[in-house]
Length: 81
Image 1: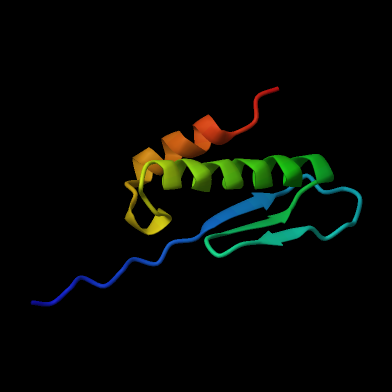
Image 2 (image 1 turned 120 degrees about the horizontal axis):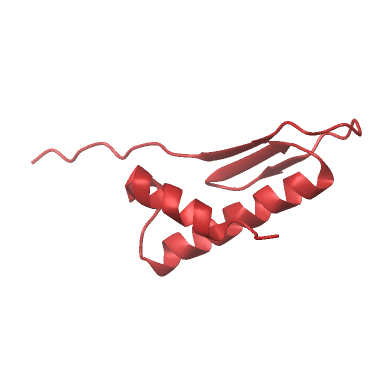
């Protein structure tokens, strides 16, 4: 019996509001955060970390989660002002 190949998945956060000239890159196994102001980069990183914590709590991985469910988790994981 053939197994379906595992999907490749990686969460990418791209910040476009960098005006201070710093190059910010945060990488992990399943996500990368690139660019942004210090505040934006920190918020995106916090969102990614909380997203993967929630996936783990649900017993899922980014490779095996429905895109709509992932979007809901990301939205829920974003810091609130």
